[in-house]
Length: 293
Length: 274
Image 1 (cartoon, rainbow over the protein chains, first blue to last red):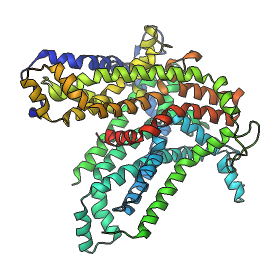
Image 2: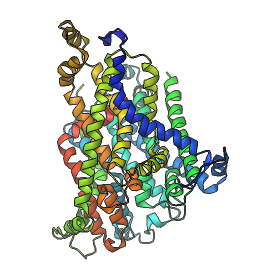
Image 3: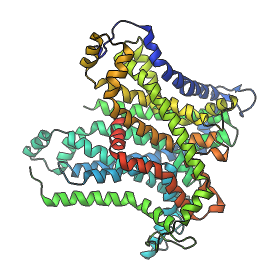
Image 4: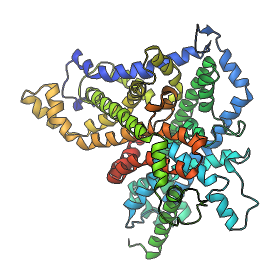
């Protein structure tokens, strides 16, 4: 590390290089973060004085069924955003060990496409697919399954999993590309050794591919779990949290409480809870997966 | 180690199937947008002809000329200022001696995973207090703040990959810190900076929550915000026009993606790995 630095003596002018970046970061990230934490301990409608209420907002949130169920929805969405894409990606990477084909660049470019687009655009495309007279229902009609067709996003039972499937669609190409690239970095001697030991395809997958992809799995988990927990844009444009509160998630509650219901203190406490949840899950993922050597 | 043609065929089939699933929604709204206005399309049929009326209606009715303009202003502000501020910071982190570098870096680390949801409430009230709400600054300044951690991480690892001998040689010739940064190191970093520009462009272009909260003035909406209002507006309830509007919003990122897709992919994959 040290010999990366050609300038060795302590020189306070070096801090000037950091100043502009840290100025922006402090003013527009650290200060608002501390303000959110402070406001979360108060009752505030957005005007007038903030009234200190201690942990009251947090207690109310945890006692509010609508909020606890919105957290439950987030965990269900993690299954769709993280678990499914990672399983699909791993499965395909397992099949593709050592397969080298032409046209990989084009496949990669297409599979990656959902990552670059605004979730608002993605949401509008899928809103159309799920619409009462949209492609999904037309397809069902075509196969004589009219009885199943419905307004998918308007259904209390189906709205959440069908929003989740959009997340699977957004993520599976990313995990595929990540894992296939990762598999290529695993030394081929390991596979040869497995062959010599007479390992079948399954043993090869669990003994060589899976441990070899540990780094990529951590990355995919952190990335997809964070998105599943935030997820504001997609819910906003597809269901708005409805029908009822069947697809409500914490970030949607933060928006509604802060900017429509004037419960700014309560919204802030929910913001802190969401942040803590994200930090906790990320630390858990990194700690548990790194330990297992 | 020659692989059989059968294996290759299976690989192709898997990839083609994956691509089909990815592309279906895009073609589905493209066909919808190109359909004849007023006709019922099921998304299961090919369009009978190409009609551009929906694109024109979406453009004029949705205010997308101003939407795209606003988005470009915000993108240029965020990407430009972020990169100009992050380069010297990353340089200091990697090449200069700074006391307390580890805690400073740890503080930046927090910003990498911090959700906007934890910041938007105070940001909204501060911007209003300073009369900056409904101005582009309300979108530009916070996004610079949240783009800086990733940019510094990205640029720092790029500085790291430049051999130390280059800057040492320049130092022996009496070059100062700034001269080494500008004359020796930056020219080596052009690819890394271009990739960073592309990633920041995409993230800024697609940012939605901040715009939703800050911008009340219809003339200042960013493209995704204009699209969300448009899609929720009953007067334009026609899904074909909404589809055309969505394509307008996606188009700039798509065009950049077509030309620079390798940078997008390698940037995202290695970027999140860091």
